[in-house]
Amino acid sequence: PPFWKGYALVAVLSILFAVLFVPRDWSVLSGPKPPQGPLAARLLLSRRELAQYDGEEGSRGLYLAILGRVFDVSKGHKHYGPGGAYHFMAGRDASLAFITGDFTERGLTDDVSSLSPLQVVALFDWLAFYQREYKRTHLGRFYNETGQPTEALVNVEGLLAEGRHLKAQSEAEKVRLPPCNSEWSTNRGGRVWCSPKSGGVIREWTGVPRRFFSPASSGVQCVCVKDASTAEEDPNLQKYDSCPAHADSCFVGEH
Image 1 (cartoon, rainbow, N blue to C red):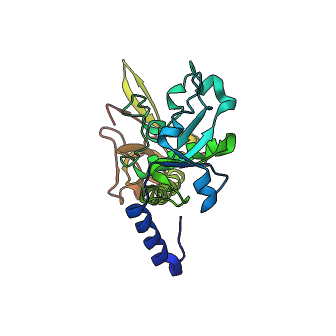
Image 2 (tube, rainbow, N blue to C red; image 1 turned 90 degrees about the horizontal axis):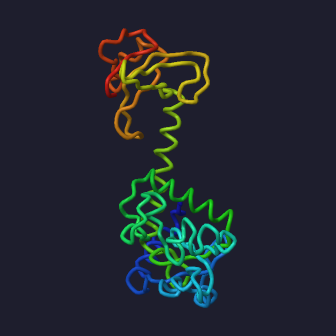
Image 3 (tube, rainbow, N blue to C red; image 1 turned 90 degrees about the vertical axis):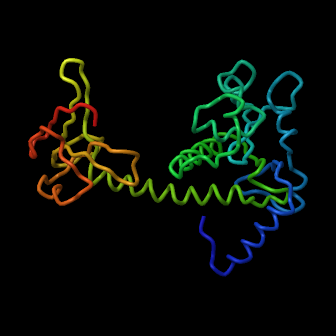
Protein backbone atom coordinates (compact mmCIF):
# COMPACT_ATOMS: atom_id res chain seq x y z
CA PRO A 1 0.00 0.00 0.00
CA PRO A 2 1.17 3.60 -0.58
CA PHE A 3 2.88 5.55 2.19
CA TRP A 4 2.83 9.31 2.70
CA LYS A 5 6.23 10.75 1.91
CA GLY A 6 6.43 12.61 5.21
CA TYR A 7 6.22 9.37 7.14
CA ALA A 8 8.49 7.25 4.95
CA LEU A 9 11.55 7.52 7.19
CA VAL A 10 9.53 6.79 10.33
CA ALA A 11 7.98 3.73 8.67
CA VAL A 12 11.36 2.38 7.59
CA LEU A 13 12.81 2.83 11.08
CA SER A 14 9.78 1.17 12.66
CA ILE A 15 10.06 -1.84 10.38
CA LEU A 16 13.80 -2.10 11.00
CA PHE A 17 13.21 -2.06 14.77
CA ALA A 18 10.59 -4.80 14.43
CA VAL A 19 12.84 -6.99 12.31
CA LEU A 20 15.86 -6.65 14.59
CA PHE A 21 14.30 -6.74 18.05
CA VAL A 22 10.88 -8.44 17.95
CA PRO A 23 10.35 -12.22 17.63
CA ARG A 24 8.34 -13.23 14.56
CA ASP A 25 6.54 -16.38 15.71
CA TRP A 26 3.30 -14.70 16.85
CA SER A 27 -0.38 -14.50 15.90
CA VAL A 28 -2.80 -11.68 16.68
CA LEU A 29 -6.60 -11.77 16.94
CA SER A 30 -7.99 -8.90 14.83
CA GLY A 31 -10.88 -7.16 13.24
CA PRO A 32 -10.59 -5.39 9.89
CA LYS A 33 -7.29 -3.82 11.02
CA PRO A 34 -4.65 -5.34 13.32
CA PRO A 35 -4.97 -4.35 16.99
CA GLN A 36 -1.88 -2.60 18.35
CA GLY A 37 -0.18 -1.90 21.66
CA PRO A 38 -1.42 -3.61 24.87
CA LEU A 39 -4.54 -4.96 23.15
CA ALA A 40 -2.44 -6.81 20.56
CA ALA A 41 -0.21 -8.25 23.29
CA ARG A 42 -3.23 -9.74 25.08
CA LEU A 43 -4.57 -11.35 21.92
CA LEU A 44 -1.36 -12.88 20.56
CA LEU A 45 -1.16 -16.52 19.53
CA SER A 46 2.22 -18.15 18.99
CA ARG A 47 2.61 -20.64 16.18
CA ARG A 48 2.57 -23.45 18.73
CA GLU A 49 -0.64 -22.07 20.27
CA LEU A 50 -2.28 -21.82 16.87
CA ALA A 51 -1.58 -25.51 16.34
CA GLN A 52 -3.91 -26.20 19.28
CA TYR A 53 -6.81 -25.00 17.12
CA ASP A 54 -6.79 -27.83 14.60
CA GLY A 55 -10.27 -29.12 15.40
CA GLU A 56 -9.07 -32.48 16.65
CA GLU A 57 -10.58 -34.01 19.79
CA GLY A 58 -9.42 -31.98 22.78
CA SER A 59 -8.38 -28.98 20.66
CA ARG A 60 -9.33 -25.43 21.60
CA GLY A 61 -11.22 -24.68 18.39
CA LEU A 62 -10.84 -24.65 14.64
CA TYR A 63 -8.64 -21.95 13.10
CA LEU A 64 -6.58 -21.53 9.96
CA ALA A 65 -4.34 -18.69 8.82
CA ILE A 66 -3.43 -17.02 5.57
CA LEU A 67 -0.91 -14.19 5.17
CA GLY A 68 -0.72 -13.76 8.90
CA ARG A 69 -4.46 -13.51 9.47
CA VAL A 70 -6.01 -16.23 11.60
CA PHE A 71 -9.64 -17.14 10.93
CA ASP A 72 -12.13 -19.03 13.07
CA VAL A 73 -13.48 -21.53 10.54
CA SER A 74 -15.72 -23.42 12.95
CA LYS A 75 -18.79 -22.84 10.79
CA GLY A 76 -16.97 -24.68 8.00
CA HIS A 77 -16.23 -27.69 10.22
CA LYS A 78 -17.26 -30.19 7.54
CA HIS A 79 -14.51 -28.77 5.29
CA TYR A 80 -11.77 -27.91 7.81
CA GLY A 81 -12.47 -30.30 10.68
CA PRO A 82 -11.14 -33.87 11.01
CA GLY A 83 -12.07 -35.85 7.90
CA GLY A 84 -12.73 -32.69 5.91
CA ALA A 85 -11.13 -32.07 2.53
CA TYR A 86 -9.12 -29.09 3.85
CA HIS A 87 -8.34 -30.29 7.35
CA PHE A 88 -4.62 -30.20 6.59
CA MET A 89 -4.84 -26.38 6.66
CA ALA A 90 -6.29 -26.23 10.17
CA GLY A 91 -4.16 -24.95 13.03
CA ARG A 92 -1.49 -23.41 10.79
CA ASP A 93 -0.64 -20.72 8.24
CA ALA A 94 -0.36 -22.56 4.93
CA SER A 95 -0.42 -19.48 2.68
CA LEU A 96 1.84 -20.96 0.00
CA ALA A 97 -0.40 -23.99 -0.53
CA PHE A 98 -3.36 -21.81 -1.49
CA ILE A 99 -1.48 -21.00 -4.71
CA THR A 100 0.76 -24.00 -5.37
CA GLY A 101 -1.67 -26.75 -4.41
CA ASP A 102 1.22 -28.52 -2.67
CA PHE A 103 -0.42 -29.99 0.41
CA THR A 104 2.60 -31.90 1.67
CA GLU A 105 4.23 -30.83 4.94
CA ARG A 106 6.84 -28.99 2.92
CA GLY A 107 4.18 -27.14 0.94
CA LEU A 108 2.00 -26.22 3.93
CA THR A 109 4.06 -23.19 4.87
CA ASP A 110 3.67 -19.44 5.33
CA ASP A 111 6.84 -18.74 3.33
CA VAL A 112 5.51 -17.11 0.15
CA SER A 113 8.81 -15.59 -1.00
CA SER A 114 8.81 -17.86 -4.07
CA LEU A 115 5.54 -16.45 -5.47
CA SER A 116 5.40 -14.13 -8.46
CA PRO A 117 3.57 -10.77 -8.25
CA LEU A 118 0.52 -12.16 -10.07
CA GLN A 119 0.43 -15.17 -7.75
CA VAL A 120 0.52 -12.80 -4.76
CA VAL A 121 -2.55 -11.05 -6.20
CA ALA A 122 -4.33 -14.42 -6.28
CA LEU A 123 -3.26 -15.08 -2.69
CA PHE A 124 -4.75 -11.77 -1.54
CA ASP A 125 -7.95 -12.78 -3.33
CA TRP A 126 -8.06 -15.83 -1.05
CA LEU A 127 -7.44 -13.57 1.94
CA ALA A 128 -10.38 -11.39 0.87
CA PHE A 129 -12.59 -14.47 0.71
CA TYR A 130 -11.80 -15.48 4.29
CA GLN A 131 -12.25 -11.91 5.48
CA ARG A 132 -15.77 -11.95 4.03
CA GLU A 133 -16.74 -15.35 5.34
CA TYR A 134 -15.06 -15.80 8.71
CA LYS A 135 -14.07 -14.03 11.91
CA ARG A 136 -10.48 -12.98 11.41
CA THR A 137 -7.10 -12.70 13.22
CA HIS A 138 -3.19 -12.58 12.53
CA LEU A 139 -0.08 -14.81 12.57
CA GLY A 140 3.57 -15.67 12.30
CA ARG A 141 6.22 -13.90 10.34
CA PHE A 142 3.78 -11.28 9.09
CA TYR A 143 3.04 -9.41 12.36
CA ASN A 144 4.94 -8.72 15.56
CA GLU A 145 3.67 -8.67 19.13
CA THR A 146 2.52 -5.04 18.88
CA GLY A 147 0.41 -5.75 15.80
CA GLN A 148 2.86 -4.09 13.39
CA PRO A 149 3.66 -5.73 10.02
CA THR A 150 7.06 -7.39 9.75
CA GLU A 151 9.52 -7.04 6.91
CA ALA A 152 8.06 -10.23 5.39
CA LEU A 153 4.60 -8.66 5.04
CA VAL A 154 6.04 -5.41 3.68
CA ASN A 155 7.84 -7.45 0.99
CA VAL A 156 4.66 -9.37 0.09
CA GLU A 157 2.64 -6.17 -0.14
CA GLY A 158 5.29 -4.75 -2.47
CA LEU A 159 4.75 -7.76 -4.74
CA LEU A 160 0.99 -7.21 -4.46
CA ALA A 161 1.32 -3.67 -5.80
CA GLU A 162 3.46 -4.92 -8.69
CA GLY A 163 1.06 -7.79 -9.36
CA ARG A 164 -1.96 -5.50 -9.47
CA HIS A 165 -0.17 -3.30 -11.97
CA LEU A 166 0.64 -6.32 -14.17
CA LYS A 167 -2.93 -7.59 -13.87
CA ALA A 168 -4.35 -4.23 -14.93
CA GLN A 169 -1.91 -4.17 -17.84
CA SER A 170 -2.93 -7.70 -18.83
CA GLU A 171 -6.65 -6.85 -18.68
CA ALA A 172 -6.08 -3.76 -20.83
CA GLU A 173 -4.19 -5.91 -23.35
CA LYS A 174 -7.05 -8.43 -23.37
CA VAL A 175 -9.48 -5.72 -24.50
CA ARG A 176 -7.08 -4.49 -27.19
CA LEU A 177 -5.90 -7.97 -28.18
CA PRO A 178 -8.54 -10.55 -27.21
CA PRO A 179 -7.43 -14.19 -26.90
CA CYS A 180 -8.18 -16.53 -29.80
CA ASN A 181 -10.49 -19.52 -29.74
CA SER A 182 -8.57 -22.78 -30.00
CA GLU A 183 -9.19 -26.49 -30.51
CA TRP A 184 -7.24 -29.67 -31.12
CA SER A 185 -8.13 -32.83 -32.99
CA THR A 186 -6.03 -35.90 -33.76
CA ASN A 187 -6.96 -35.69 -37.43
CA ARG A 188 -6.23 -32.04 -38.15
CA GLY A 189 -4.06 -30.98 -35.23
CA GLY A 190 -4.51 -27.56 -33.68
CA ARG A 191 -6.61 -24.66 -34.88
CA VAL A 192 -6.89 -21.09 -33.64
CA TRP A 193 -9.52 -18.66 -34.84
CA CYS A 194 -11.11 -15.30 -34.07
CA SER A 195 -14.75 -14.37 -33.64
CA PRO A 196 -16.61 -11.31 -32.28
CA LYS A 197 -16.78 -13.10 -28.90
CA SER A 198 -13.42 -14.90 -28.74
CA GLY A 199 -11.59 -14.63 -25.45
CA GLY A 200 -14.82 -13.59 -23.77
CA VAL A 201 -14.40 -10.06 -25.19
CA ILE A 202 -17.57 -9.05 -27.03
CA ARG A 203 -16.83 -6.59 -29.83
CA GLU A 204 -17.94 -5.43 -33.26
CA TRP A 205 -14.96 -6.86 -35.15
CA THR A 206 -13.53 -10.35 -35.71
CA GLY A 207 -9.79 -9.93 -36.21
CA VAL A 208 -7.00 -12.22 -37.34
CA PRO A 209 -4.92 -14.65 -35.22
CA ARG A 210 -1.38 -13.67 -34.28
CA ARG A 211 1.27 -15.03 -31.92
CA PHE A 212 1.85 -12.47 -29.17
CA PHE A 213 4.45 -12.05 -26.43
CA SER A 214 3.81 -9.67 -23.53
CA PRO A 215 5.71 -9.11 -20.26
CA ALA A 216 2.32 -9.19 -18.48
CA SER A 217 1.64 -12.73 -19.74
CA SER A 218 3.59 -15.94 -19.45
CA GLY A 219 5.02 -17.16 -22.73
CA VAL A 220 3.48 -16.75 -26.17
CA GLN A 221 -0.27 -16.69 -26.68
CA CYS A 222 -2.68 -16.41 -29.59
CA VAL A 223 -4.52 -13.09 -29.81
CA CYS A 224 -6.95 -11.53 -32.26
CA VAL A 225 -5.71 -8.40 -34.01
CA LYS A 226 -8.26 -6.02 -35.51
CA ASP A 227 -6.09 -4.77 -38.36
CA ALA A 228 -3.70 -7.19 -40.07
CA SER A 229 -1.63 -4.40 -41.62
CA THR A 230 -1.15 -2.69 -38.25
CA ALA A 231 -0.02 -6.00 -36.75
CA GLU A 232 2.90 -6.10 -39.16
CA GLU A 233 4.33 -2.99 -37.49
CA ASP A 234 4.49 -4.62 -34.04
CA PRO A 235 7.48 -6.99 -33.56
CA ASN A 236 5.64 -8.71 -30.68
CA LEU A 237 2.90 -9.85 -33.07
CA GLN A 238 3.87 -12.64 -35.45
CA LYS A 239 1.85 -14.33 -38.18
CA TYR A 240 1.31 -18.10 -38.01
CA ASP A 241 3.31 -20.03 -40.58
CA SER A 242 1.33 -21.25 -43.63
CA CYS A 243 -1.64 -19.08 -42.68
CA PRO A 244 -2.81 -16.23 -44.96
CA ALA A 245 -2.31 -12.80 -43.41
CA HIS A 246 -6.02 -11.91 -43.51
CA ALA A 247 -7.43 -15.32 -42.52
CA ASP A 248 -9.51 -15.40 -39.33
CA SER A 249 -8.71 -19.11 -38.78
CA CYS A 250 -5.34 -20.88 -38.85
CA PHE A 251 -4.33 -24.52 -38.55
CA VAL A 252 -1.28 -24.83 -36.33
CA GLY A 253 0.85 -27.37 -34.55
CA GLU A 254 1.96 -26.18 -31.14
CA HIS A 255 1.59 -22.44 -30.56
